Image 1 (spheres, rainbow, N blue to C red):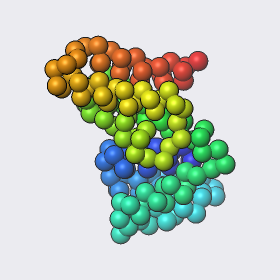
Image 2: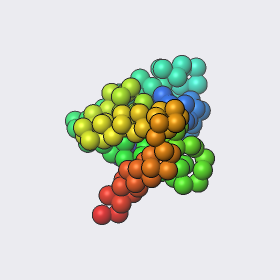
Image 3: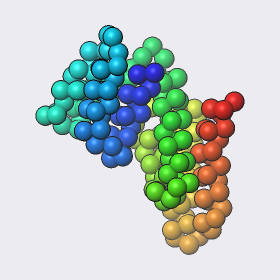
Length: 157
């Protein structure tokens, strides 16, 4: 689970959704709760002077595992669920969420199923067309919401 959490924290840090201090607090919490935490957590915990990029690299190292594809898919699922919650509570706009999904799928080193990557590209384009007045907003928002909800539904199954 630490691999998935580290990958998710790295994505959130890259996208500016969390701060360096949030990452350090996360590492501190795990260190105090585990008997033998991975050594990278100590490096992260002591990372007050590290740059964001430095913490990102430590999280990347911690997130690496024997099955990077599974870790990537799990991190993306948690990321999508968090974005669904933001969409539902109104704390993020559909346009911003579509952009973040695109960035995660296409500007990180996650290994995602092709249908996820393709959807993030398509929905980002859809919202660009909405902003230009070519497409209708409700249709794009419903499609985005359904995509994000599918991750919650798959977790319940």
